Amino acid sequence: MKLMLKDYFNPNQARIFTVLILTGILSVTSSLTFIKGATGATAKFSLETSNEVFKDNIKLNRLQRPVTNAALQDLDHNNERSLRLALANNLQNKLPTSVKKAVLQAASKRLRQPISQLRIIEFQQQTWKNGCLELAKADEFCTEALVPGWRVVVGKDEQTLVYHTNQIGSALRQNEKASSSPLTPVRIPVSELPPPLAGHVVFRQISSGGFAGRTYETVLLKDGQLIRVRIGDANDSERSIRRVSVQQVQQFVRSLERFQFSKFKNLSYPAPSGSADYITYTLTSQKGTVQYNDISRNNLPNDLQASVKAWNDLIASAK
Image (tube, rainbow, N blue to C red; front, side, top):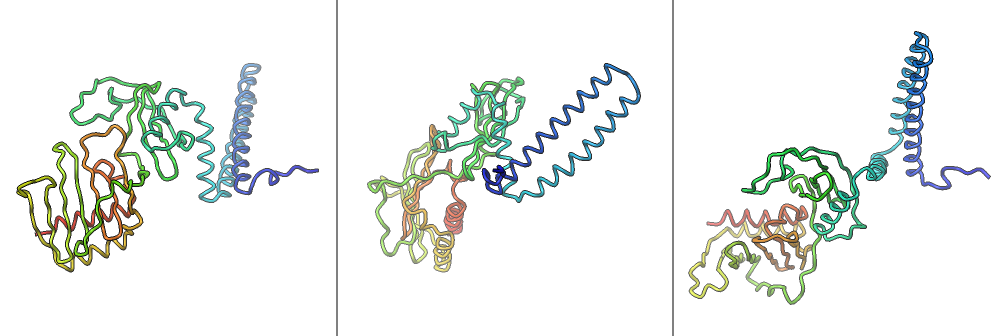
């Protein structure tokens, strides 16, 4: 009975396996050619031997390029993503275990996902220019010193986190700007949901927290009034009333429908663990409530970010 490659692999896996086999063959061939050249040079310093090695190298180079290109061209875009992942997984053995463990633990905590669901996509050795691993916080003093370490990318689905570490992973910082991590939402408990909107109210924002720890409520009425008050203000001294046009109200409502604001109903996008002094925003339409904070805003789903922008633009245009 003949054992065929297709008996063990599906077509995509077979192509990837073929590329890996070809790459291995070419690597072995390169090594044999080098050994042959070295042996010939030791045994006999002749022009013929040198020419023979040179010709062999030329043949190898001529063979390697078309074979590799042909194999890669046989893979479609998705298969080539698969190939890179296979190679990346193979390279993980070269990343120090202590660094790998530290990065995966940090990413698990940040994404609220088990380590088994995460993978290291890529990594490379780096020499950072200071003790803050080139990720200094505002007004933070960093020692000026060259720090050998790693740049590691951890991912799950479309989420990627970039970390800078030292050589053994005992120092680690997340590169927020380089990371792309849509947050995983959690369901808002029913007991913590704000009251539903009255019929004449189109939208409501409740903001709380920050350094002052105050809570403000801003509501948009159908007639275009924007009313802002501070919760707990006994004298109502901070009340402000501004207006937008009815047409602007209607455009805002359409934008909520266009960006499917209702699909985020009763979801909360929490701040990273350990964060402090952030402002939490609770947004409510006639179709539901969503919650986020100023730290996580840039990592919200695109449609939710667009809804938040539409609301902030409306507030900014009020007179």
